Length: 206
Ligand SMILES: [Zn+2]
Image (tube, rainbow, N blue to C red; front, side, top):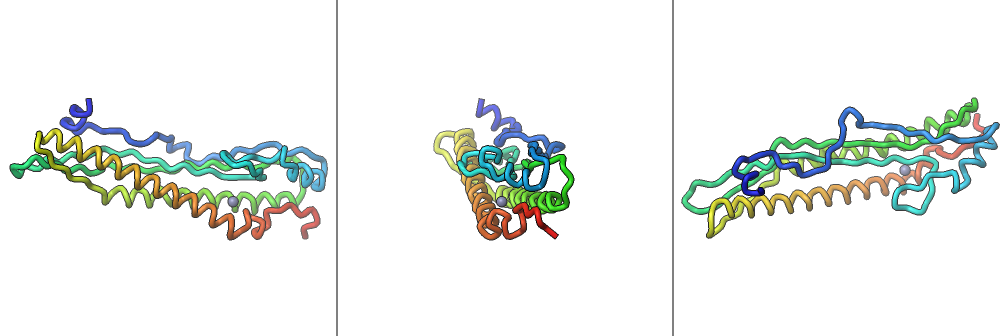
């Protein structure tokens, strides 16, 4: 099957697919209480907070970003008398999906509104940090290529070159994901998870 793909240079789907129209989503969870102080207590209870996937710590809000890609393999057999073949990614398409989870309270309080503005700004910044890595991924993929030669046949060479390219793409992707995670952690360390930006509810706000 692989050979057929290569000979026909048919699109080979490498990444998971996302829905671009659905790129940014915000989900709200309901917060209970009559007054600002009630709400303050409610949201400071870890049982009411959100667990970030894979972490035991609970948060009042959080954002996740998912970057993905699709590309075809361009397969270029070299007609130089030797069985060599070059492959590179073609029609690279990267995308980002950001999802934000935030509290929602139906009460009316300016201090709550202020908290929400600041919380949203903090999470939105996470979303834009994460999504900036989709562009970096595209740049990194666009310069990749792989060449292999084979004593057996040109098809063999093309299969090997494609396998190698596949591995390089995986490495690039893992590297970018690692950088993305570090960037989120750095932003949270810098802002103390938003606290220095005022993401703590102060019911006596002016
Ligand atoms: Zn954060």
